[in-house]
Length: 293
Image 1 (cartoon, rainbow, N blue to C red):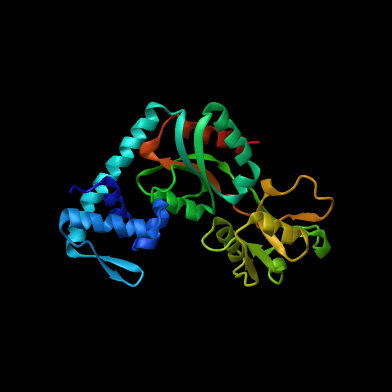
Image 2 (image 1 turned 120 degrees about the vertical axis):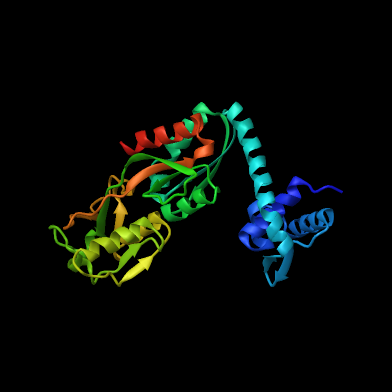
């Protein structure tokens, strides 16, 4: 009996992710199916690949020796699928990532543009903060993503899209003065922000650090739309990307002038270099046009 590619993929992802459960989730399979494939591979090769330690899977000596070969075979399989997709870019599946701010303001227009040009395209969309998206790109779990100031591996390319203007906002109920606010002015207010790791909380901390201060009254939330609702309700203040603010706030939301000025994160289109092509170019060009509005 010869080993199959599906068995080799199961072996590779268990080794990569450290457990059968994680590999099953990655491959969208039931865990018993993953276990069955590994047993089949061990039988075909005549070696034991893993030692089970609770929910973790530890490679045996034979498993460590065979892992580089499995990695090459999985990579070749992905290249084969990629080649087929590049031959017909109007079909296929695009794994696209974007931060919450871009998703709230520009994702509908971006997807509409893609649908118009590639009507048979399937999109798997991930909305998360830029730090998480950058790591997913590095792990080859996304094809292209819109990210702020990404830290990416050598196999990931990036092209500038624009910058993000962020502003301090508060409910008019709080009665904050109509003058530039300094870090000390907001120190004792409840502040809503994204949790670590995120560009927004880093930007916030850097702003307070200009005055030698540290914001301590931080409440975190992974949804910018919820942060905005909490801010409008008067529960605290927040530092938010200006594009997500409603055009008409009926006097309920106050945009605060800040001193010193708040830094502007740079927005990039980041993508797998081996997947560069017309589809990726379309995503980046459309995102650039939308961010310039």
